[in-house]
Length: 57
Ligand code: FES
Image (cartoon, rainbow, N blue to C red):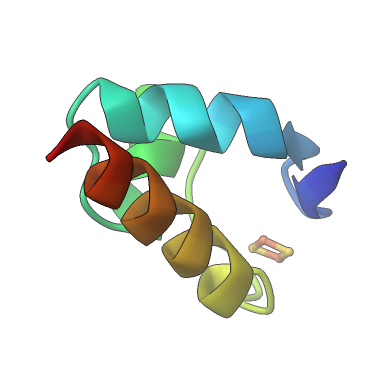
């Protein structure tokens, strides 16, 4: 599933970035070589990151 349409970032990419230490959508996108643009994906990306962080703890 695509999380961020502007950057064509998929859910699994966001999960991987979160597992690699990204704590916010902006940081996750940086790790993927992108940057936040319109911001519509932020709530969804944030929830994916918190899920991954909860699993990691
Ligand atoms: S959908 Fe992610 S920045 Fe636009």
